[in-house]
Every structure is written in structure tokens, then in C-alpha cells.
Length: 196
Image (tube, rainbow, N blue to C red; front, side, top):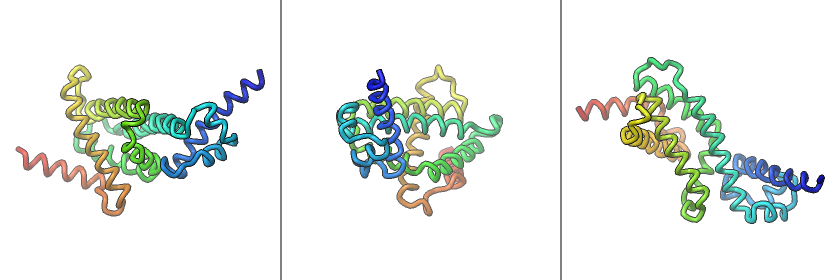
């Protein structure tokens, strides 16, 4: 009985250790030894529970991104639901950019794995589902889009999701020259004014 508890504890410890490593070292720089050390387990425990270090890191990243998505959604809920779309947009982007500073390692780790998505089916599916859920969240939160109007929600949400992906890349490369929330709102106003 106690041996079974220790084995289950090792599995959870490894997952928590891998999560810590993602935050501290990122995806590509984390080794099996790093995870085993962070988890307080042996290297062999990784193979026993997860088969490969990559499988363990992928599971850890899926969980980190899920936790992070929940945290970000809570932080971005508009303070003033009666505000106009551009005011909500700017307020939400202020929250997004603040999250870049607080959770830089999570954003960086997610970008590290994107190039490997075709080889990691479970991570690819988890990311695809997360992106799709976020699309609908953007459309509902900023535009009050009816959930039954899937086509409009997907189009609007895809626009905001593409914007977020691009801003993440700019911010990770050069945060000093990446756009601010006010810059993004101004750009949206300019685009809107020029397309009338």
C-alpha cells in the first residue's frame, strides 16, 4: 500500500517539478535531470511514469497553459461592462501586457513548442482547443457576440487571437518597442476610420 502511494506521489511530484522548470528554464532548456532534481525523484521515475521527458514536459505545459488561461481570463474581465468596445479593448490589453511581465516564461515556453506541434498530437489538440475557446471568449467579452452566432464569433475572435499572438512575439523580442495597450487601441481607431 505505502509503495503505491509513493509511486503516485512521484508522478505528481514529477509533474509539479516539470512545471517549475518550465517557469524557470523554459521548454527547450529543461533536462530530465532538472526535472528529477526539482521533483526530488530519480531520473528513472520519469521513464516509469511518463515514458519520455518530452511527454512529461508536454503534459506540464498543457496544464500550465490551462491554469494560465483561467488566470488571464479572470484578470481580463472588464471592470466596466457598460464601457464601449474600444475602452474594453484598451483595458483588457493593459491586463494582457501586465501578464506578459508576470508570466513571461509561460509565453516563451508556449512559443518554443509551436514548432514541434506536428510531432506532439496531445499538445497540438490541447492548444487548438484552448485557442478556439479563447476566440469565443474575445468575441463575447468585447462585442457581446451571441454564442449561437458561431461564424461571427469565430471571425472576431480569430482577429483578436492573431493580434495577441503577434504582440506576444513582439513583446518577447523587444518589450521596449512593443505596442502598448493605448497604441493598440489607437491603431484600431485608425484602421476603423480608414475603412469607412
